[in-house]
Length: 141
Image (cartoon, rainbow, N blue to C red; front, side, top):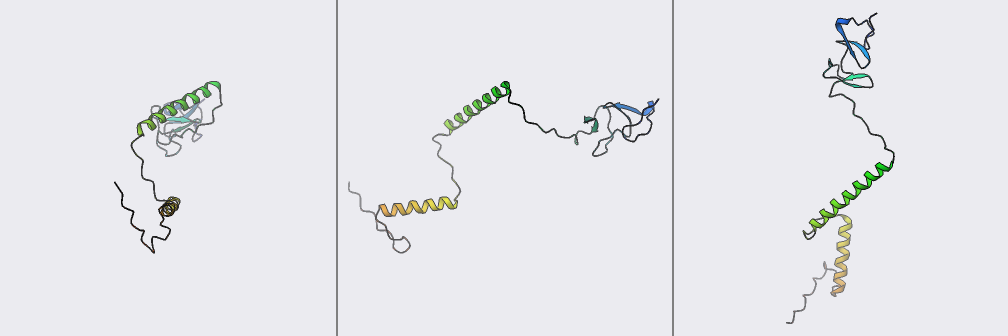
């Protein structure tokens, strides 16, 4: 008895049979689920017993892995390696200076506060907009 095709349900004769993914298919019915490209035994990828071309093969999503002793050890080892790398990067970057930070409203506020503190410290309690600051006293050598 000849089996039915997994795609169209019609009888599949031995001369046109593709036996794959635990099913029987006509050669023309063995195509990608998405783009309908005809597949063969060399270029198909099976997923949930359905044929796909390489481009449309469903991407596997990962699930949460249980915290077995081995996984906990690997996680701890990975964290230690990460800390070593960041410490090394930090040590290498010491003394290089620092990068310019964008001028955020918070930084502008801090800068104004710092200028006010500086003005009070040097006796420049008047607003710089209304009165220019007095010149600094000459340095005595």
